[in-house]
Image 1 (spheres, rainbow, N blue to C red):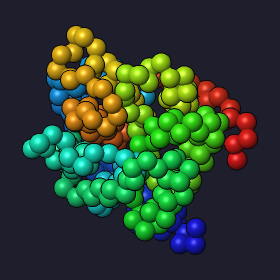
Image 2 (tube, rainbow, N blue to C red):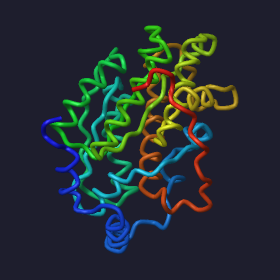
Image 3 (cartoon, rainbow, N blue to C red):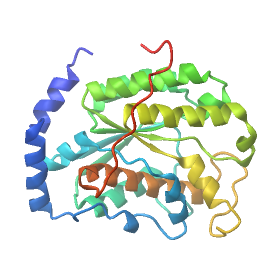
Length: 279
């Protein structure tokens, strides 16, 4: 990309390598954040059971760098999401923003919503590169997989697309949080839908990035012993589900900022080789 985003963003952040550690120490002293991410305060009682599906926190070094440098945290949101959560609620992205303000103790956060309903991962990846050049985000929040699964895009093609796009974002000093597939009960029996879900989890593990497991969380919340969550009957209808999703995303981002300080964090398992044909 002609603009040389990686160089520009490194200069703006003003830290790299060991300097990042020093800057984070200074940030901690100045902002007085908690010693660990306050994950329990980010998720309501109704949504709490779904956190059992969220167990693969990863560091977000570019988000941490933006906070340490005192810059506005810029988040680019890609993928379909509802406009409002509930009759009196805010938008999905606004709710994430509010929770991050409280959890990270910062005031300057901007979420740029560029989601397009029905978009496949390959098309989103192309468009995302232009959006990153224009908006210069620190983090991309990418809801991905549902449309590819419904369109029967092959799991190999889907994996290659996500692998390549995540690698591109890393090369340009942009963190990424992947948001997994939407829940509908009938999709529990759809082999291809299950395969795309598994593929997204595998890619996230190989690339060492966060994936928020939306389907798995809402599946837990729809079980009989979780009466607080209305049963979902079709895609994108559950306001309660998206309300929980915004909480899971905010929790994942917060844990990513504090990931270096998580106690007794086990090492990542060895990454399996990428699918045949990648790059």
